[in-house]
Figure 1: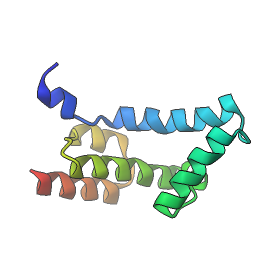
Figure 2: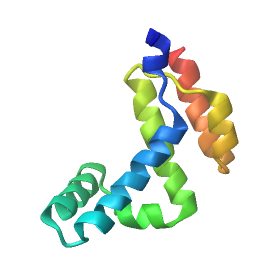
Figure 3: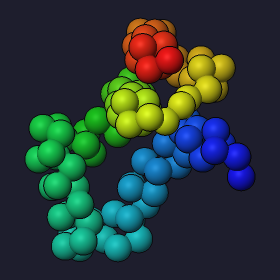
Figure 4: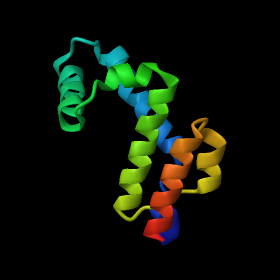
Length: 104
């Protein structure tokens, strides 16, 4: 695998990651300590209600964008064509583009 391929943060992988987060609640049970601890940790660290955010398509995209931006800030790259094809919120696309361009 080339170095650039390892650095690429794919939108599809971010989406799958959030789907797996939701799957844990269904698979382990929403009252399982592993699941509730994970959700509480995310909520506390990010000062949000992650489950509420994931229920709404518009705020779900905000979560995707947050992960992509954090990845860019950590030295990862994103494919802006993939971002543009996936996101319906044009403001999120432009925000991600701005971070990607600054990271250059």
